[in-house]
Image (cartoon, rainbow, N blue to C red; front, top):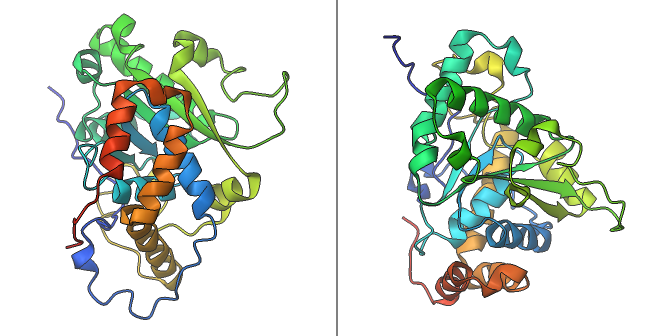
Length: 292
């Protein structure tokens, strides 16, 4: 039997319980959270359109959405529903080595995603990422589909348990508006409801996707096998990014952040569903949760 490699991935601070940061940010500049209104609206729609799924944020582009929700949901029953899948998936799956494919599967298994697990889980899994052309989702789908086939897991069941939430740059709405999944052959293997769109104003999308400094190092396929990725970056850009991320988590925990998130959720058609109403009730409940 082939040994399963241990999971790998870039180091990321725990920002919900940030005691480990110590005085690390004492000299960091005050972050400018100019994007908060758009972030709240986007995060609320991601939640409302998730179909009560466990959320897996792919790569680094949706970091701020993950951070905001981590703070806002920390005192709710959803506190363990947000996860990061820190993989860059631009490489062609057919060009990956067997060792890289094995590492991909090890990393997903570590997060609770396996063919068997997908087939037998109660809640669906929703992947969340900023989408331009959909290449990351295409590669992720093919890697998962191949794994499911090899394990002979029940694809007819699994295809109803997986959702892809694509966050796109907002354009003028019209009958001819392009949807990120419409030209994707792989998307035809999933139910239409499994492909979800959320939009951001273009300059906010470009900030998160192209310009925002991140607190973790990029993790492309060429680094998946590295076992030395568990060290934090401490350069000035990384520390500025850390200060911003800490502030986003703190805002998510605040009454103002939770109220803004609730407002975005209640504007969605899914508000009529019991699980959404239950989540909104929790978000509206006063909390005395302290940072530790």
